[in-house]
Amino acid sequence: MALPSQTERSSHSGRPVMTRASRSRMPRSVLVVTIVVPIVGALLALYSTLPEGGASRQNDDAPPARDVADARPGPTPSQPPPRQTPPSTPRSLVQETPRQTPASADRPAPGAPDPARTSTPTGPVPGTLGSALEDAAKRAAGTPPPADTVGGRPTPVDVTRPDLAPVREQPADAAPPPPRPDGTLTSSTSTANVRTLIEAGERALASGKLVEARVNLSRAYMDPNIASGDAEMIRQKLGAANADLVFSPKVTPGDPLTEQYTVQSGDVLEKIRKRRELTPDWHFIARVNALANPDRLKIGQKLKLVRGPFHAIVHKSDFRLDLFAGSPDDPASWLFIRSFRVGLGAEESGTPLGTFKIRNRMANPWWINPRTRERFDANDPKNPIGEHWLGWEGLGDSKVHTGFGLHGTIEPESIGQRRSMGCVRMLADDIALMYELLAEDVSIVKVVP
Image 1 (cartoon, rainbow, N blue to C red):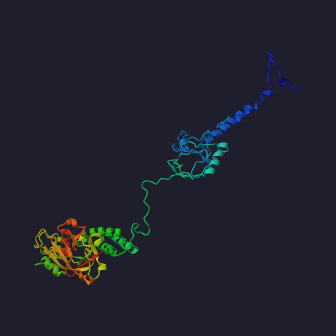
Image 2: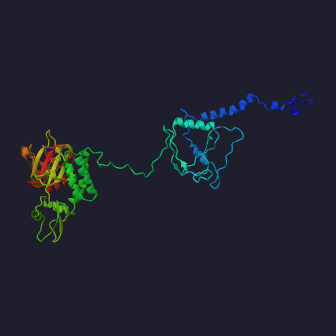
């Protein structure tokens, strides 16, 4: 029997009144709209954020999502995070809600404030459809390693890289890459033995040991396996070192080419040169010691003497003369001094190759042209050989070459060209120095290709 409250009642107006049982039933269309539509909307919103391939997409121009979250106000460090209560009505699955992060050694325990952050990270609620979709997207794309943090915030992720790995910029003061462990010259084609000598010479130069550096670098320079770039470097460095070792008044201890001399009563420079058996001309003593008046020496005066002997090697292909010091019988031990530019013969054979010795020396010489027989006197400004002449005598197979030598020129523009009759031309100051250094019957001149 139905209770009175379950029976239909009618109003005085005659309209039917819905019973309690009929009111509890909801049409299916309304139920579908109420449940399915929010889910479909959430899925569409989430799908719009995914790139091709299923991985979560990030705008290159926008800051990372966690940076945006961290910018919002959050609970102060003295307050615990607010308790999250599930909403009583359905919410969008992509709406930001507090994310639960597991505790670790570098994170505060649940309920304790995190001093490194001022807000709570956000994201889909674990266990929801949004969280499942996000986890699936991460598994499909591969989870990137944790980003480094600077000031409590992660560094930006380079989304153009396939692996989505964070970009770790090197600091401005980062140390350069270390040199090669073997210390070899990477830009050199010299052999290992030559490079070893060069490195030893450079270390000696860096330590101020000029005499030791000159020995090692000269040995490397005389080695036929040296690269052209290394040879040029040695010419520059030893030329600078010898400006102090040879051409300055300073006497370097341990230098076998120099010595210090104390002027005695009755000394003149030529007498000193002979007494000390020096091969350079006495004019070189005056040059090195910067003597304003070589004829007025003072008793007890200190002079630098340079012993010698000196020799020359002419490189025809480079229009270059290299000056060396050492024994004429042991060219392998010669020490490099400096280089000069020269002019050469214009004929097809030009300046002859071979080995010569200095036969004679003349200052302000006269000269007869061997072809025209025209004579030029010593003081004639048209004299083609200039102010100094050093004649050669061929040695061995080179005896067939006669009439050649080193001399100056009244055509300085011809230096570096083939315009002579076969002799080697030099600028006025250069040939004057060679005149003082190269000695008769002692100094050797080699002409090489």
